[in-house]
Length: 465
View 1 (cartoon, one colour):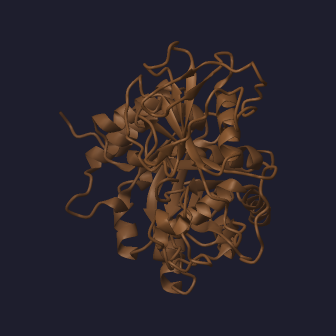
View 2 (cartoon, rainbow, N blue to C red):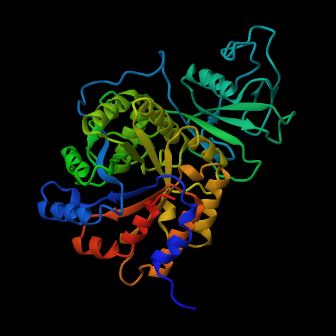
View 3 (cartoon, one colour):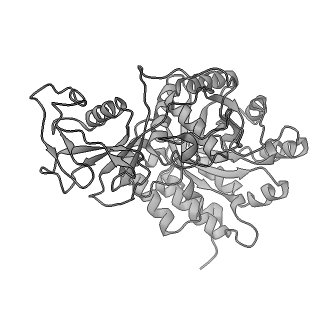
């Protein structure tokens, strides 16, 4: 059988391309050091040589920070405001004590659910708490969460609660129950399967008073100090090139990155919850931003208008409990996306992978943003195809950005031209409208040689039907 070139293989399936597509190059690493002028200039030289192969650029440019540490945040809700962190795919959450609530028509919890004397509903003894309120069947899931949070917020001894759904101990399968916890909810045994319906709502301590997070010029990598004024040079690569700077979680934070250098990681005594270091302060910033996202959204809009930003790539790879695949962070991404869309600015969201999580897929599909699963940077194989198939099954094939990573491999472990062609073919057949090439920059010799087998494929991907 004669050898088939990469270009020919791509042309065989090019008919599947229907709309204008996006080929985005992500620029990461030392090429963004303003002081490293030689590398920066070589990066732009190489990009100009190949500007027919891409129509979008995504440099490391922004992160989350506090330009004015003396300004306290404005709580987003009525006093006393209390923030909760939700964890799913668990059996329960506990570790301290249980708070007996008693019948809901008497005692300190008497009107916790808006229930007056003589209007309470049954309680059921369980292994998790002496008594737990059964929630009315007609309540929506959101109402159940809201009412249980209201009860927990009203009592300082309550640090969180497990919301049980369809649990085997409940007398009716459709009923739900809240088990209120004291001390800690640190124990969260994981589980999976259709019977794994419990969720933990962990009462977070109030956001730190020293910080109102906004968009700042920085990156997820320590020491990278990008210059937003480079936007002019990225636009100068061609009128067809869209500008998509990255907005990342603040992984650059050191032990003293926020002042005071204390941990902020959920319930209880902050200093007792985690070691105070880089991850702790990154978590502090994320919690503060999630509790009051409006200042960051406003600053992102202002920056987008200033530098003619087509869209932001959100890359929130912060540590647990607030990574890219957690529902509170995805909920923020949806809010950010909706707000920016009103201003004509698009949003993309980076995530490790969907991994068959239907709830996560539903959350990610709530706005018009794109989603880039980072595990698709890997070589083409059955796992890669299964991930793409799952996105398509969830109705999100058109929102999918499929990653390639020329600089992820060295000369020994690199992908062959045939492997690269196979992945390009599978990408075109998937109906995806974007490929994300990660990462251009860093070593000049590497960026020139590693991307060489990809330029022609990227150009063909961009061709319209």
